[in-house]
Amino acid sequence: MLEELRTLVLFAEEGSIQKVAQRLPLTQPAVTRQMQRLEDALGTTLLDRRQKPPRLTAAGVEVLAQARNILASVEALKSFAADAEPHGVLRIGLAHGLSDTSVASAIAGAAVAFPKVSLRIRTAWSVELIEQFGRGQLDMAIALRAIGDQDNDAVVATERLGIVGRTGFIADAKDAVLADMPWVLSPEPCDARQKLRSALGDDRQRLFVAAEIQDPAMQMEWVRRGHGLGLAPLRLLARSLPNGVERIDIGDLDLTMQVVALRSPHLNRLAKVADAIAAAVGEVIGDDG
Image (cartoon, rainbow, N blue to C red; front, side, top):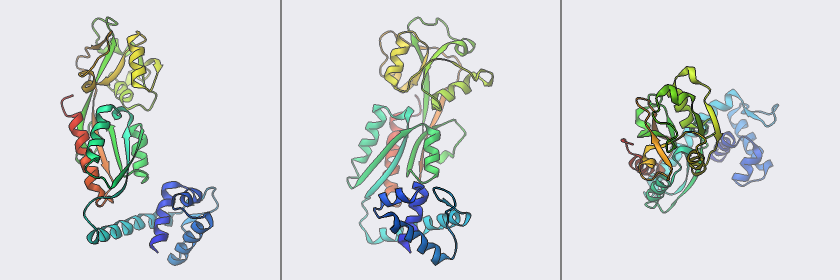
């Protein structure tokens, strides 16, 4: 039964029999038989096969939740008989806005203490990572959120953003001026871009974006050439600012976000690794920008 329950959980994560077969690895007919055996044992239909690809039925969703709890309990029992050193794969999602060298170094430094753990790190925008975490595709998500939008237990640091422009681009930037300036920003749904729009007020939903560029170094070059204003974490601006680029005084404009580390409750021994990584990221980002 445990194998069949694991197959059900994998199906929920991958969304197709073919992908589950590749991941196990098994043949597709073998995976199909496992799902059918589980349905027979439980006396209910778990997959709606009228849809292509099949989707979980309402009963399937309920059984999935119980399956995850059962498998987590089995892993917890195994940990009593095994050594205490964490091992296995930890799937981590890291927000694009946090994927700089200092954060990467912090994660790598924390991982050194766990030689039997393999990290699988992917980067995306926070809203995408949070969705993937909710679907069980990530064991941990390190994301950016607006202050007040999350459980305080998940907060590991405060990220403060600054505005930059070509030297002399604007003399004295006030909020109203900033709202009308051209911008060099990452594509939607960029976390920093959403925060900027919110900070400028609901009546300024349409920023004039002169260039959409995801790469931070290329963004800074466009800013240096005077194509518009840009955004960057203050912690990075304090370390290095390219020649010809200056920080812009933003007055009382609030460009503060919180860094959260969402962790699965089913990590077992891998929880030590996730906690160490969260602490390392929090330390390198800090609370004072």
